[in-house]
Length: 113
Image 1 (cartoon, rainbow, N blue to C red):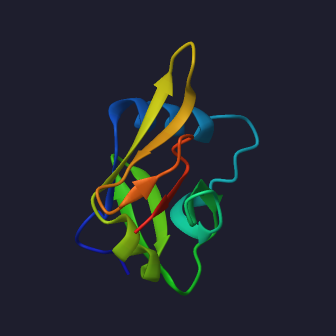
Image 2 (cartoon, helix red, strand yellow):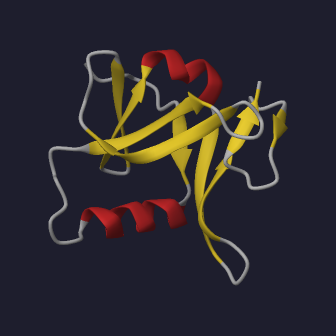
């Protein structure tokens, strides 16, 4: 079942990078981009971003043609978040801009609410 709203967004740079990963030889096209959280990290919760198969507890949504999934219980932590891609000298990788985070760690991969 498709959700009518997109809980998170991808910056143009993140869209380009995800599409690059999806176009690599051997990519499993039955997987979708999973956005989520898990316990742990220096601030309490860590972001999840990777390719995975749809689970029963997931909501599905599409961002610029990219199939995405998220555990329905994670939406309260991530709604409104933007995933960006940075390709600079000091930082290279996905960056999470989460308006729900009360604190974030210095590396930007974990947060607290």
